[in-house]
Length: 149
Ligand code: DAT
Ligand code: MG
Image 1 (cartoon, protein in one colour):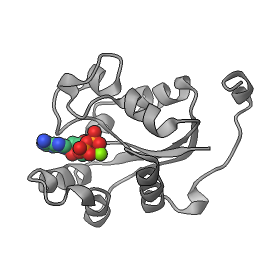
Image 2 (cartoon, helix red, strand yellow):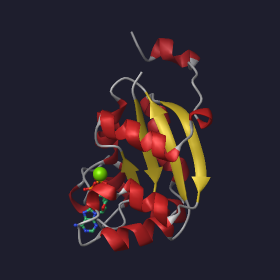
Image 3 (cartoon, protein in one colour):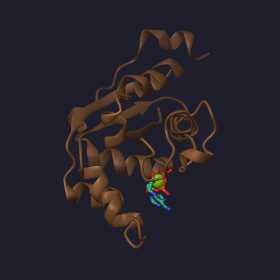
Image 4 (cartoon, helix red, strand yellow):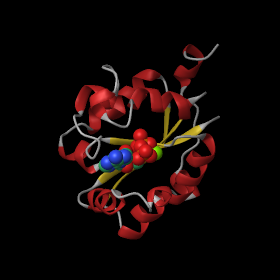
């Protein structure tokens, strides 16, 4: 079963949107397999955003991620990587569709509330970066009989 890495960024936590965001993934039908509330070290933030290290916003992005706690999660389900990106919405909340997390709750690219892995391979890398094997729980929700044919 596919897995993706999702992080509620410091703005999402500070604005009291943790329950709202988790609820959207739960009610969609995805399965939570990893969850932790944590402060992020500079080293971890820099590694996580390594693909953006040459971009002008890299420094402020890393500062922001380290500025206040985040909620790191792993969600599982068929097609969860792409579907989570759809639930999250476009990078710039101003152009994100209503009904998406960024579309409903944000107004600025530097405060876009949430991170989601952009591809299956990226998800595997990010899950391994943020979670140890023993922090992930493999389980089969009984409701899956009513979610999957
Ligand atoms: P996404 O988070 O939608 O995958 P991304 O990987 O292109 O977007 O960028 C990572 C984060 O960097 C993004 O969530 C917010 C920040 N960011 C991206 N483009 C930016 C810009 N032009 N100015 C400021 N921050 C930006
Ligand atoms: Mg990205």
